[in-house]
Length: 481
Ligand code: SAM
Ligand code: SF4
Image (cartoon, rainbow, N blue to C red; front, side, top):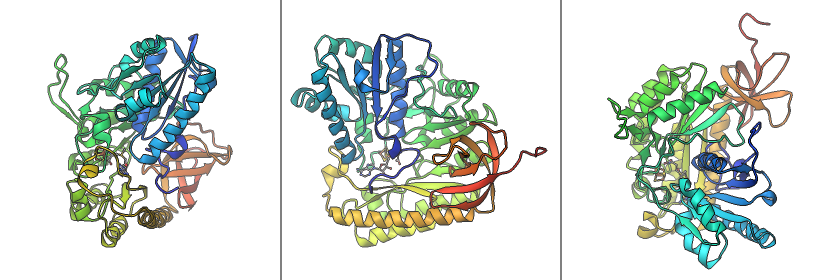
């Protein structure tokens, strides 16, 4: 599969994942909801907010849509293929609804605004359409839909951040949790639909973020991933009633979260290269528990293409940013997003992308071929003129190079020791643990006789590797056997 690469931010293995019932939930429910999520981690995080709103309305979760009174699908519009997958799924749900007419089907998230009349009126695929800023209105919309009306709310908001809603953790490993710190995006990259589907950028109340992170730590979580489309432009100045004396920048926020406990590892995603500051880099370097890992999407290595994409940096500027990261945080992992075959891209532009990948030495990348999205600036301004076969060929070269870079980066780690946070059993064997080091690399190692558990930190010596995984042996705790 070429246009999707598995990762923690957009994990193909999680696409379409259904919500697992909350273990140990003492409440009794007489209505059931089923939710499936697609797209980026922001969407998965939003599904956790929706789950919380529905639980307050007396809906319990089910993993089987056959048992559900309410079937929801949290959608993604980022590439055409994502939309096609979701349409197929909706058609399956419609068939089931014919057998169970009382069941309601709702579309949430990024496809809502663009396809609302098509899905509701023309194709009659769904009963409810709810945009990413309208989840608080879900209870009212469910009532409307139960009464036989078509229920829609796709209004985007300038201030909704769901700050006060405590998300219900979905399919969590109990170790790592996503915490949304902002919503929307103001950047207007010409290829991207996000500013249209998710609206203007707004930062969430810093106090509510810190409370959520502290609560997670108290519940036993040991890693938080602060989420936003552009986390480095986080800027919180209070909400009028409770204004803070000093505005809080992303560097300030990172520091405050890191200070909750040295045992809480802090990650974040995504950084726009134009916004990540030295202050953020020095904060990462200062605190051992802030992960030494930056996702810094380049998109293209050609200054001409970057300008057409409205990324607001050049190739040289990006390379200088990578140098700066390596200077301030020498052991930092760096990953990227890359789009192959953007409008007018030539072989020379493509070669420049391969070169910047080599220069940056990415540990990992999320790689896509360009997919024109309706309503974006690129769709209105440029011709999508690179043939699909060329896009795919270039993407394959990008994927192959990234494979070599990842392998080389992993080989360099052989013989080194890393502090690893254990996330659970390895996929292949319950005799092995799987965890991540600070640089976000997956490490698999035998449990041996050491008494370790999920959520523990352990030092692991790397003894071997594959392209995707480090393999190691655990070092006994100091003073232990
Ligand atoms: N805000 C983040 C950023 O700026 O890097 C990520 C946004 S988007 C959800 C994730 C990635 O999808 C982008 O970085 C880009 O590589 C890719 N993407 C966005 N629009 C695309 C399109 N029209 N075709 C192909 N890939 C696209
Ligand atoms: Fe899309 Fe660019 Fe905003 Fe990322 S920064 S969400 S790519 S517009």
